[in-house]
Amino acid sequence: MGTYQVIDEKTWKRALHCAVFRDSVEPNFCITYELDITNFLQKLKEQKHSFTFAMIFAAATCANSIEEFRYRFVDGKVVLYDQIHTAFTYLNPETELFKVVNVPLTETLAAYTALAKKTAEEQEAYFTGPLGNDVFQFSPLPWISFTHISHTISGKKDNATPLIDWGKYRKREGRIILPFSVQAHHSFVDGLHMGKLAAALQTYLDTYE
Image (cartoon, helix red, strand yellow):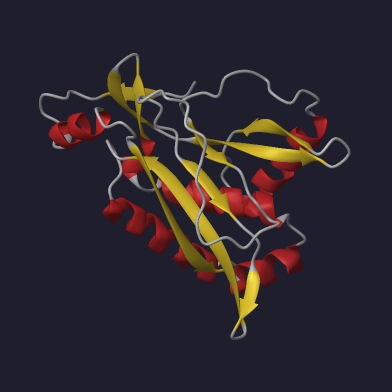
């Protein structure tokens, strides 16, 4: 498990908001929107990188830059992780069953895509154990260009792991558009922070070289 600092909720500016949403019947909320991946996809094809692994790296990198996406609950306390890593689903085409693969975030996209490919291909077990707190959980859905997505709910209100998904991309007016979805715990993340992530990620995709 990664390193983190325990938050003093007596002086934390978000303590009241955290407490209010933490007691909600369903404290998570989900936003779906579109991203323009025209530049990103073209560059990845030229560099021969996996789109899925590259998109995981891009989203995790941008989410890490926003403090609110790095808060979690640990033993009932609010903590802020120094860095959040990745966990993603990976389909076995023969059995049509997925496995969950954990990969630490690296410094560069090239290093991450290589490590993710190697780890996913070498892992034999479908599940290697409970996911840690310090991950963003990815589950791409490349068969459907959806406009909304929902998720199974564990019932554990203190489970604050963000769930990030995207669907089948399509061409529209000469651009390549990707449906993209983020679910986050409202104790830590508001619409403002969702907006910051959307803006940061679109900038990353537009400027990737």
